Amino acid sequence: MHSLRYLTCISVLFLFNPKAMLAAIESHLQLRANIYLVKFGYPPKLLAIDDTTAYSSLESLGIKDGEQILTSERPGGSAPTFNFSSDQSTSSPSIAATASEDSGITTTTQATSTGIGRSGSASTVSSVSSTPGGGGFGSHPVVQSSGPLSAFQARAHPGNAFGGISAVDSSPKPKPHPATPPPVVSSNSVDAVRVRDQGLLVVREVKDDNSCLFNAIAYTLDPSMKNNIQGLRQIVAQAIEDDPDAYTDVILGRPRKEYCDWIRRENSWGGAIELAIFSKHYNIEIDSIDVSTNRVDRFGEGQYNQRALVMYSGIHYDALAITPGLDIPIECDQTQFDANSEDIVTAGVQLSTILKKAHKYTDLATFTLRCSICQVGLKGEKDAQQHAQQTLHTTL
Image (cartoon, rainbow, N blue to C red; front, side, top):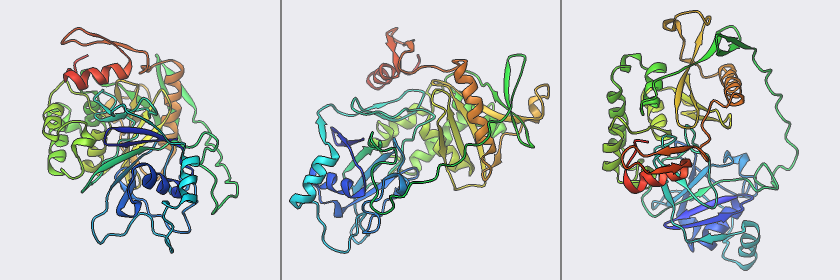
């Protein structure tokens, strides 16, 4: 299932393959798909479709379940996303019918709202289909757009975990053997997971002061900024100001200047946008592990030689570190690791599983908050995001 946002319309699309996506763009948006670019991921990657991949599954092309897909007007002279050897316009009755049947398009007039919760500075929220936000994000991609912008929320068709049947390669894919869970170590209520030949992976809790993400970044990436959290906020604001094409008002959920002023405030929460910026600024992959789902959101994946990890528990971020022993001073912590080794990530997910079983996370759908500014009671992430969007009150 794919949630389509174009201006103020939201639609639910069941897209099996890129050809169905092409049909949906032409049929539903009343746009010729050959004049538009389609991008996905973070940083946004151009989706190139030709005869050999037209009927591949979306997952085989790297489009994950829950991924946001962005379209923007194609600059003159650049190659289109859809490049077939012959004119295969989906405007023809046969293909348009396929789009109607396979895509399952339904429309609601509800406008897309943009959240500003601690879980993410700008998360697209839809009543039709939503993707867990936060240090997750997924992530909320940044797109360079020179024209009208639309976005799809990617979700695999319920009948096929791989996003539909592929006419190119229908052979069953071998399932990777799961890694052996690392051994768990506990002492004085401190849980740890032993990482082969490295030590114990532990959570290093940071202050819960509305700057937890920035505190976690200071701990893992730049201890010199431990007492200069405002400096980290300035890094984010400066990056957004320096790249208006990437960080548009649509992506940020509010005017860029307003967002920059907001993120500089000491009580404003950071999220996916900030993690992506810090990954690029420090030239390191940052992996955020969501306790409630054990999902790993990777920022800067495949771009750097080192990685750092943070743990996201719903409304709070903590740092992850390797220690030689639970009785060793934190000054001996290792917080940056070889990006080519998955051992540390496997251990991080194992540690997340321990925390989840102990319910050491906040259920974003049911938790209650009170706005410290106007004293309004709020329930769940949706209420908190809507209240923040409407009032700009972010102290909860």
